[in-house]
Image 1 (spheres, one colour):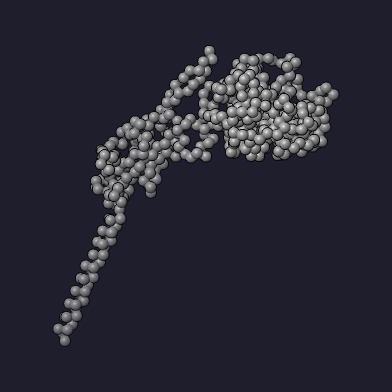
Image 2 (cartoon, rainbow, N blue to C red):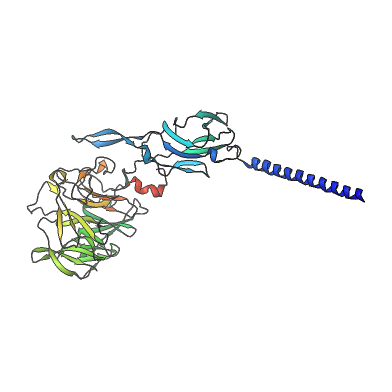
Length: 492
């Protein structure tokens, strides 16, 4: 029986050897399958030894721009400018999964990136630049991590590990803004919104989705409307009834979801659409509507009333009754056509500041060389923002004051002023400087004296002109480019 036991042991040993062979074959098959699944760009198994660890510009970014500006003689001349940005201002992001190296934001407009040094730190032994070989394939060019690259198009690099076999391919993408973000670009919307009927003063306001222009015409007060979200070259026109004849269009203010306007008798009229008007209960002694300011969490409209020959400020929270005390109006305070804005204080967001400008009384003994903005925190007590004599606004006969694209802006016409001049203030109207670059009014506006402006919900600044001196009643709108980046997509 011993020979049977020897036979069984031999058989078991052979089975064990066969199992080991099958196991080895299985492992080999798995390895071959894994190798076949690797992309043609990554050779062998990518590892920590062929990773790109960091990427940065090896030199400052230089942007070249040119612009047209008006010189001291009033001539338009081209000014070229070069701006240098430190390399550390731009941080690359490395996506190891997608093998993508990119900047989160585009470089400034005018940046030159056709010969840009880039410093890349990797765990690999060396890198190569992948270039088109002209035959539908790619060739590898030995490349130093500090070499200059043409980044106007995506660049592909391959990083080899020390074994010179395993490698990983990355794509570097750098975008440059195609337009100057802070430039104010203008477009004409209508050649003649009223067919020449509007020749006098206008007031333009935004009411919901509509742009509403109240205008003086030879036939009375007319209302022109358009949808600011999807503007048409044709405006709807409605001539108001005889009861609105003589209404002061320059007094119109939006408050509480409606338009309020003073009529010829000093009564305050209200409208939800600019077409149908009804009298409020505020009486018949109102001379102007100044603007709205939030006091103690309550929105209030500030008005000026004639109290027996004395001008006084009054507040209303509902447009139907006066609230609290009255404040006396300073002698130098403007008399009408008020424009302005309300913003919370930087130091206390619960308290608001209302800043305004308006036309001045030509009979008052007021400085005739400069214009000033005024501000209030409660609507009753006002302060004239009289800055240094060398940093004031020029005299503007029809000033417009607004807060737009994060800046306080003012413009207007005058005996010696051109409407194309745009002024900016960093302290809400105390110190002014003329904007000579980027955001400006269109040069075709020069010489205009009858106009109104409004800002819609998409950041468009509208300019509505009356017919005057042989010039048509055009409508323009402009927007600072960066306000439209979200609509148009990245890379603008």
